[in-house]
Length: 147
Ligand SMILES: [Zn+2]
Image (cartoon, rainbow, N blue to C red; front, side, top):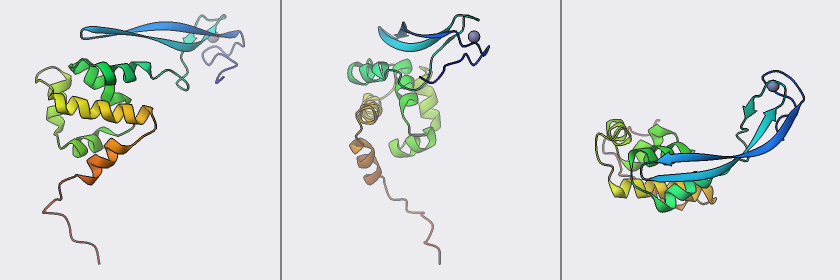
């Protein structure tokens, strides 16, 4: 366990517990059970990052729906930084913002690709990422090798 003392009030009257949280998305609610630490002294409830369920991202990746909020959740679940993801997918930041704010419809193919990256990551694979990397278009204006 990460805490044997409350990081807010330093009390050692902490107990472990579980809580069910509901995540509401467009057309869908996903419930996940989270471990927490409850402080009996100050009443704080803390959710340690390590060991939390990946249920939400995995269920979204497998079942959708294609929507701005599900897309954003999936993207944020990825260990891939946003600038790199944009390059890999060949999309602009403006596209991403428009899709995540609902100003433009997300192409299903893009959503599914991001979902595949999430599913790979959670299952310890990397073949979608490897394919994206190997299929990157070669830049015609690439800088010459140094030397
Ligand atoms: Zn406390």
